[in-house]
Image (tube, rainbow, N blue to C red):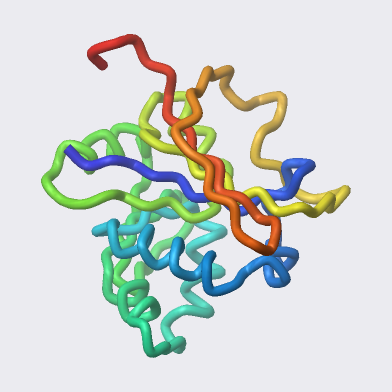
Length: 183
């Protein structure tokens, strides 16, 4: 069974929108972590807004480490009810997104990796479909912008499973759902 891993850049005050503020905190350590995370995945699971941003940027990118090749070649599953023409190896998941994700989880393969996609993350948390939440906390207070968790976010208890600290001060806090033993 595949795992759904949500990897989200976030400020200390919870902002996830337009993460240009991450640039000063990204270094070789973070790049190595990001590459290991991507290469453990077989597919991306994205919300519409993240997909639209990525599809404009990634297809023209290249690098020597193979990160761009992996991003560009892997399948993408996109939660959308408004887009009509998939591109960039995408399949649109319209309608019952949690049911579609539950079905994807039952298939053989590597992780399904979510980048950003705050609304999708909240929906899948509510349906208990996220196996690991990785919050890339950046020592920045943005003040305004879309936040990952809002008053509509589902109440969930998570258990910490690890923290990675980069020399820039950014940290990746990994959490798993606090499920009863045996689940």
